[in-house]
Image (cartoon, rainbow, N blue to C red):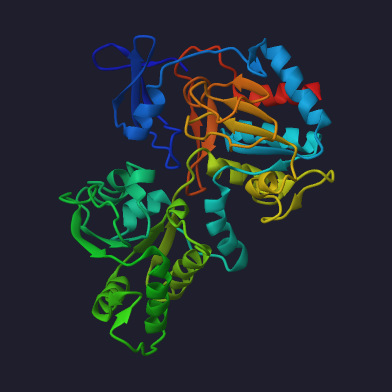
Length: 428
């Protein structure tokens, strides 16, 4: 796609989708800056770090030695061919990259899992066992008058969530929508994005420990059913504070409970997600209420969605038997590596240098952005481009209802992860 002209005549791209967090903000303005790119408008710390990362084009390597791309592909194919059970992890790539990974796993008889699936399974287990009622980013932006941020530092994971969804000055239905209440249910949550904003009527802080949030929600479920709750505190909060929160939920015209599974990093955190989901289902019988799960960075939502389309199962699927075999515990790549049940790791990290492969003595094939610094020299390293910068692509947004196109913004010789994976598959 050709760059559009700005009002001053300089070439730049408008309405760019940002692939560096699960929200996929699609209103960025990106322009040239020397040999690189510059975020001109609507950026955040994640987008600036991603788009403005300098372009480097190192050579592929085998055992730390520079080789041609064809030689690296041949070496990778040989390792997969000789492997007893290869593991295809990381999955920091776009829809096409995940499709190509699954096709390669089918042919090579391996296991597919995302680097961030531990957090995703805090949601998946609840969806599988009891279901939920979720809203979308657009519905929350345009309709909600009450947001409950449950134990999640959303501003760190998604720097523009509050700006775009909670503090928006206009909505689809009004240029002057009513003010909103934001409740931070948890300790130490960053409130800076809502303090002093015109759209926000009230900010309520309830400093409950993350692992006790479920107690608060379960108590409000009981109150909703007319039960009597004894005691002066609930989940470490004063009883009056919980009563007040419940009253706000009942009075809301459209309430939304927001959580991000990566923030719920404590044992059995899926039970907290279940408590949120059950509360939303119960109160939704008489009030309009919904949940909104965030997270999904590093292409995690795209990985889970594509794996579901292709295999009928979420992540942690083995193709070793010639057909999809799903086991959420057995086929977690972290467990396979620690138990020495895999003898080869193929790791994909095309978005962020932070998605480094595990420090393991298992031979590793690394397809990654040139700025990734692995803890050990991989057997094969193939530098790949970033979707939405070096090549076009598609990603699934965190609410799972929209797939957004990514645009090629600069000239680069770095191949896409999908094209490399397809060539490895053809070489098997």
